[in-house]
Image 1 (spheres, one colour):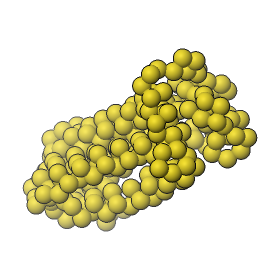
Image 2 (cartoon, rainbow, N blue to C red):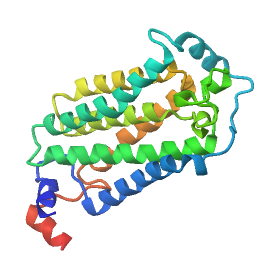
Image 3 (tube, rainbow, N blue to C red):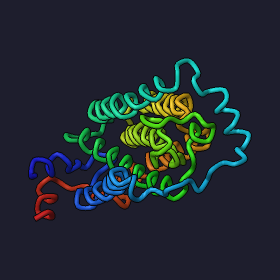
Length: 259
């Protein structure tokens, strides 16, 4: 614990800082807000859709008709999207957090950046879950009668009507944008490249989810907006002097405050 606190303590020259006593509870609440509804989905998700899209808007219909099964079949797109979002993107984002710090960063800057990214992603996940369960929008495959009786397109699964917003897209956007925003605040030379990577990650994820017939365009757009908002807000809150930052201090002061 002492080693972690020492690592998290920023130097006077650092552009961002963290407050473990506040950040850890925020991350914990965010994770609970995501994990608990996910585990209890069949018990707490609405039994039927609230937004059933009897007359689907033209934009969503347009993108559905042109992207479903585009390039690869929908199940392959679904599998690729899962691996991309929940394996490859987190690993590459954490690697970036630890290696692409700015010129003013002191020891432990990578750990602080990773903590900020984690916080943004956790809060985003909880918000997305709350909106999903409240909106209860029917997924495209269910609306168009392309469902099955088991597997990822199971019509009897309550997941078939929690389409809005896209959790995958929100996850990808919050990962990429929070890393890029943190790098920008740290004045890292890699920041422009990271903003580009965040855009690619978000757009590619959105495309895969629509190709898989799991989401409409407005689902992925809403997910991206929530993810990007959290990705910008939490690094800014950790900018030196802002709400989730502390004034410049040495490790000894940080430890004495903890005890």
